[in-house]
Length: 339
Image 1 (cartoon, rainbow, N blue to C red):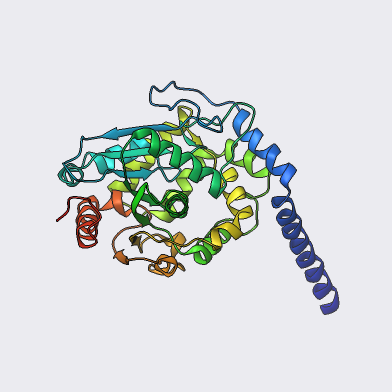
Image 2: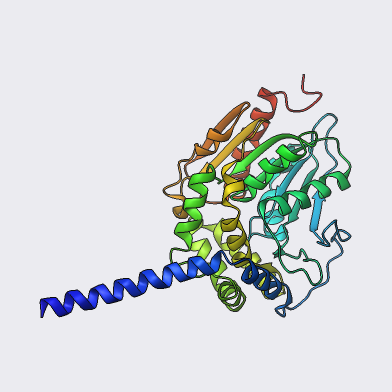
C-alpha cells in the first residue's frame, strides 16, 4: 500500500513538473509570442475616445499621456509612467490633486505604456513591450515634449525601462527615481513568484485569461500590493471603472516579453543620479531588498523606505514622497539652476 501511494505521488509530481516545463517552453516560443501579442491587440474592448493620444510613433504606437502645471524657472519636468493596472485618472486623483504635488512647482507628465490604459498598439503588429521597444517609445515621447532634460519617476518594472532610456539617451535624462523596483535579479525573481505556475506567461493562454478576468486580476493585485485603506479603495474603484470602459491591462503580454528579455534586463546599469523609493507594506515584494536597485548604480544613489506604504508610495504618501524627491534633486544639483 505504501508503495502504491508513493508511486501515485511520484506520477502526480512528474505530471506537475512536466506541465510546468511545457509552459516554460511555450513561454519562450517566438512564434507563439507574436500570435499572443496580436491576440491582445485584436480582442474586442469597449473603446472610449480620448483626445490625448500621440500621433503614431516610429513603430505605430499611440501613447495616451497628459500633463499638469507649467513649472518654475530652472526646474526640470517630472515624468511618471503608469504602472498597470494604475491609470492616469488614478494618479491624478491620488497624487496630482494633493497640495504637495502643486508645491513642487514643476511641470508633471504622465503616460500609459503600450498595453496599459488607453495607449494603442500599431495596427496589425500586436502588443510589443520588450525593454528596448518600451524605451524607444519613451525617448520619442520625451523628444516630442521638447524639454532639454527630464527626471523620470517610473514604478516597478517600468523603472528598469527608465534606466534603459537613460543609457540610450543620456542627454534627455537628468535623474531616475525608481519606485517599488528591485535590482534586475530580485525583480525577475519577483515576477517568477507572481506567476509560479507560468500561466500568465504562457502565450495565448495568458492573453485569454487576462482578457476574461482583467478586472478580477486588478482587484486581486490591490489586495496583495497595497494595504487596506482609503488609497486602495479609491485607486481600485477608479481603475475598475477605467478597465470597464475599455482601458487595457495587458499583464500577460508584458510579463511574457519581460521574461524573454532577461539578458538585457540583467545588463542594466544606471549612470545618472538614482533614487530608489520602496514601500515595505507591499506583500508581493516581501522578499525584495528595498535598497537592491542601488546595486546597478554607477553614479550617485540613495534609497528611502516608506514603512507604512505598499506598492504605490508616491500615491499613498505624496507629501513625504515630494519632500524626499525635492531633497534628493537639491542635494545632487539635478536642476540646472539649483544653486
